[in-house]
Amino acid sequence: MLITHATVVGLDCLLPDYAVRFQDGLVVEVAPTGELAAAPGEEVFDAEGRYLAPGYVDLHIHGTGHYLIDNGPDDLAALCRLLPRYGVTSFMPTVCPLPPGEDAALVASLASVRSEGTQILGLHLEGPFLTLTGALPPEAIGSADPERVRALIAAAQPRRPVFSVAPDFPGLAELLPLMAANDTPVFMTHTAANVRQTQAAIEGGVRHATHFYDVYPVPPETDPGVRPCGAVEAVLADPRVTVDFILDGVHVDPVAVQMALACKGPGGVCLITDANVGAGLAPGRYGFGAEEVEFACEGGPARLTERSRQPGTLAGSGLTLDRAVRNAVDLLGVSVPQAVRMASANPARVLGLERVKGQVRPGYDADLILLDAGLRVLRTWVRGQSVY
Image (cartoon, rainbow, N blue to C red; front, side):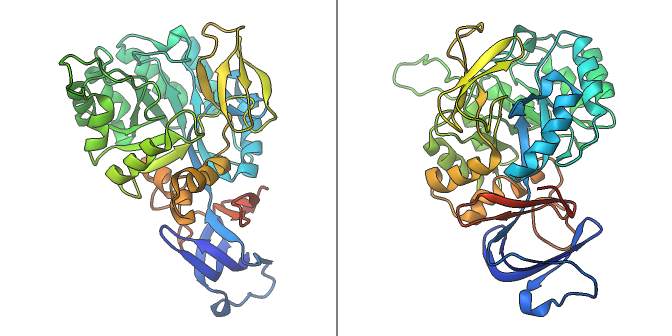
């Protein structure tokens, strides 16, 4: 296929009136429209000046619409078919913790799903090696059991499991070599770690902080007038660690994201949704496993209702990733290329896929999205196949 007259979104620039040819799932040519002629029998699509961007990559998502990953493989398969309308061409389905044994069974069932639409890049296991639950169930707190880690890794095959852990989790040092084997990234989250604990986890292989600022409490002041430092400061100070944010205007103040961009540079900050069931739907109440969440506005945060254990607690978001990109432009004042990069090239880099995903370049996967002037998704291709 040849897409012509597109405004191609690069890492830090826009390329107006460009053409992109893809074949056998890969981008093969990118050049000014006048320099690429259609081959005999080749399908040609005229972008009419609209943005052609790399597909979005969501590192942290629990559900969207009426589907929740923790419900099992049918919901995950349905989510793969739904996400292309939001520009998501690949993602890390995120699993909440369950008791030992039950968790491995769920992970194994999810690992068997074959995507028809958005590509599954692995499984993101948010727990049970955490110290703070947030809105997660009590099972979010486990023990330092290497056999449990091995069982979850085995259950996830052939998918790659990515663990989210707390740097202050007792016994974490023994688990990190298992989690980080084969250059697998390890995330941190749900932590009250101090600076030394965070630095030790980074030395042990933790390389990314997910839903940064959320469930990272400020350490208590021990010396009046001296501002304490903790995990947030240790992460911002270390260039090896990338971060992601839920940019819905509630989960985190935009100035914190701007500060992270100043610390990490244009390639070190990602956008995620941490979306829950009900995301992308009208405001209202939706079942969340045995509990219930409520959205007061479209794209706003999910909060547990009075029918839940912790009424009013934030429980993920109502974001879709295309809305998060629009929010980056509106709330942060960044350029379109930077906003897109935070949802494509940057998360691809977190997963070690920066040479195959996240850019519109020859040799990269033909994961492409067509956006209008307001950054709303019009078309989506996954490895060259039109899926929306």
